[in-house]
Length: 105
DNA sequence: AAACTGACTTCTC
DNA sequence: GGAGAAGCCAGTT
Image: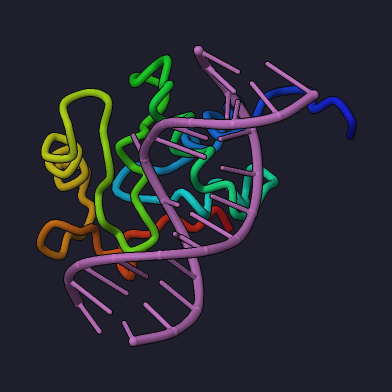
């Protein structure tokens, strides 16, 4: 594959859209699913670019430890509240991955 | 084409 | 578990 059909961004967006409500996925997880394990940073850029927050639930994407990282629509505070409303288990300021991490399988 | 940046991850202390 | 440093990937300038 010398010329990828779509940019990594497009792949990440497609995956983010597949995240079910009440669940959260880590950047590394999406990166791996996108076809490039380790590209967690690149995934972050895609979320920041987030062209459509309505179709791309970027707020369901958290760091590997469950800590909420940036949010281009109000900050991590809003992001946290959103996840709680969706039914995601929370441990203080971090999401409880053990109970709410998304499993594409 | 090269260098820099960034919503990350992992290792070690 | 927390703080600091190094490494990786894709995109942007």
